[in-house]
Structure formats: structure tokens, C-alpha cells
Length: 280
Length: 280
Image (cartoon, rainbow over all chains, first blue to last red; front, top):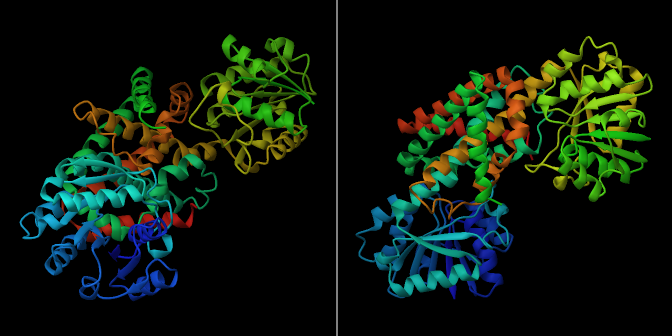
């Protein structure tokens, strides 16, 4: 199958590698606004050729739109406008409610499948693409009842090739879930990085003792602002709700620590410890 | 050299393994209040024998006190009271100002070296002990001017055997530094776990989409309450200071997200991104 990948970053590039290597794609066409990304992707062999979106649409059966959240709805609309009945388009955005809403009434909505492959690293760009990024991870397909059954089947097959577990969910629920188990972690991590960077201004060696616990907690703070600003803006309401609960929990810790109330602090930590049940 | 390890958990047990394997210790005596820990440590070969503290003091040249922060000052005092001039004692606690203060005027203070090997996992108990835990990590020796030079030399040699990088620091500074780069990460992680566990009460499947970003951020929330409650209590003032700065940073995010103020949110994330400079 010929496929086009629009947006040659970590997400699109990593798909290109494994879809080609595992025989799902025979020819991959790359589309990207950035000349540097395009040249790099071609150079390191992520794609077989670079062309414009218009050209690409004359060559492929499947289009993967892997651009930042803020551009995705517009690009998917362009793709659908140019599409024919034998073509399928997916996006890979981390937020799903707004994009599904804005495409809801497109005359070719059935050719579009809204997906969110839940994998990534704190790096970005075609250089960051790697094989195996998606293996054993979860992909969410949203509002699949609005997509044609054949389109959904093709996309499931594609994600099977990437060894992902498919979860179906409506787009509003998806955004609530990801606010809790992904977006908030990033905001916490950004804020924690800022806290220690602030201290560094008057205590030059504050990072000398940084241990693995610190590294893992702030690792996400390296995440690209170009990717995360649009996610935060698109999922604003859910993120604010989670942030409020999180700040209440911190305040509960603050109060019990301040008061020397060991019983309450112990109770809070013990309850947090039950997270062992859900994470490895 | 014969050594005693008081407290046969992750920290003491992991030291036992490598100090024996790497030839620093020829015979290791274990001391622990818990019969289960003692039996386990003997059973899995962490120590050569189990005895009381009094017996141990007749047999060894070096005593490693690796008990929870809340018990350490009392145990080190007991050890010093029983010690002779050829014996050295160290503790391994994560907070250092209080213990150094409480031992400041002990008549044998020079036989004591205050240390904090900055390594660990979220697991505890003798079962969790493992070889290599300390390799390439940092160990802080605090207030070394209060220890005898021979005692400090011996302890440095011991940490060399564990392949640790020694940093000298006064105990008050140590506690400020660890509040920023270790303790706060744990409080954040506990609070984040509580936030999502709360949501789980009305959204049973909230963890279905949990990805690696979430796992790394909440990993520390699995940390033992028996270890962390005393650390938080002993380093209360520093932790509250850091917590306040952290909550201010979160509030800055909250305000800019709420107001749709992209410029400010972008600035905050971009500044957080500079953490790349200090962590791998």
C-alpha cells in the first residue's frame, strides 16, 4: 500500500519506519512545511519521496496526519477536500474532542478516522523517530461510528502492524482521560523544573545532587513547547479541573506537614501508595 | 574488615552485597529489630550472622546504621556509647541536619561520619536489596570537620568500593538541596497519584490509557510511607518552602491556561524546557 505521512516528526517518522519494515507500506510519500524536516526525513530514509499534499493525494490510499494539534483540523480538512472514496485519512493528535467536532459535518467525514497512538518520547523531529516506539502501547480510536467501517478496518490493521492495543472511546471521554493520565503529568513536570531552576539562580550547585528520582519526575519537562502548548489549549477545561484537584491534594499535604499531623500525612501517603495496584 | 549493618533493608542490604563481593568486608554481622528481616537477610545471604547490637560491637570495626530517619539518631547514639576508639559508625539517612545536631556534642562524635548515599528504588526490605544500586551515584558526607580524619578516610574508601562520587557539604545545605531535588518530587508524585485515584472512584477505567509518561511521574508514589513520613517531618521547613514555590508555579500555569494567555504559557514551558541543560 502507498501511504502519505503529513508531518515528519517523531510520531510520523516512527510510524514510517515500522510500517515500511513490517510490510504494511510499500511506498511512503512525505509531506512537511519544513524544508529541513523534509530533507532530513528523505536523507535518513524515513520516506521514499517528498512532495506537496496535492501531489501526494494522487499517489496514496492512506494519509497519516501527524502535525501539531493546533494545525491538525485544518490539514485533515484539506486532505478530505482532496480525497476520493478509496482514500482514508487519520490524525494522531493527543486531543480529540475539538478535531472531531470541527470535522463532524464534513461531507467525507466517513473517510476520516480519529486516532491517538499513546506513545512518544520527550524528543521531537525526524531525528527522534525510532523503530518500536509503538510496540505494546495503546491507541485510542475516537467516535468510530462516524467513520466508514472499511476505513476503521484499515486503520485497525495498520495499528495491528504497529503492535498496538486498540481502545474505542468517544472523543470527549478521551480528553478527560488523557488530562488525568498524561497532560497533568506534563504540567506538574514543567512546574517542578521551574521551581528548581528558580532556586538555581541563588544556589548554583542545586543540581549537583540530582538523583534518579528527580530525573524521572522532571523528564517530561523536556517536552517540546510546540507540541504541548496546543494540547494544553485544546484540552483547557479538563486540564484546569485536574489541576484544581491536584492543587487541593498538595494543599492537603502542605497543611498536614505544616501542622506536624503525622496521622494525616501517613494516611495521604498510604493512600497514594495504592497506586502500586495500577502501575508496574 | 568486619562490619555490622544495623537495619537490613534495601539500603543496608544492597551495601552488604557489594561490600562483600568487592572484598571490602570479609564478615558481615546483621542487626535488625524485625525477626522477619533478620531471617530473610541471613537466608538470602546478605549477612553472615545475626546478633544483637551489643554483640555486634564486640566483633566489628565499622558499623553502618541504615534504619529509618526517625530512629537513626537514637541508634547512632547507642552505637557510639558502645564504641571504642578503633570503631567507626556511619548513618545513611536522607536528612542530615537534625541527626548532626543531635550528635554534635557526643563525646565520641569523631567516630561518627554522617553520610547520605543518594540511591534507592521505590521498593524496600531485604528482598529489594541488589548489587550495583550505588554504582556511579553520589554520596554526600556532611559536616566532615566534626569527624576524625581516619574515620572519614575509611568511609571514603568504603564508598569508593561502592563506586560512588563523594560530595562534601554541610548538613543544613544538604537538607535544602535534597528538598529541591528529591523530597519535593516525592510529594508531587504522592499528590498526583491521589488525584487520579480520586477520579477512579467515578471513572473505573481511568487507568486504561496510562502511558509511560504517567508511569514515570507517579513511580515515586509507590515509595514506602515508613521511609518517607520521617524524612518529610525532619525536613519540614525546607519542604514547605519548596512546596510553596512549586504551588506558585502551578498557579502561574493555571492562570495563563485559564486566561488563554498563550504567550505566558509558552514562556513558562520554554523556560521549563531549559532543564534539558541539567538532566540527561
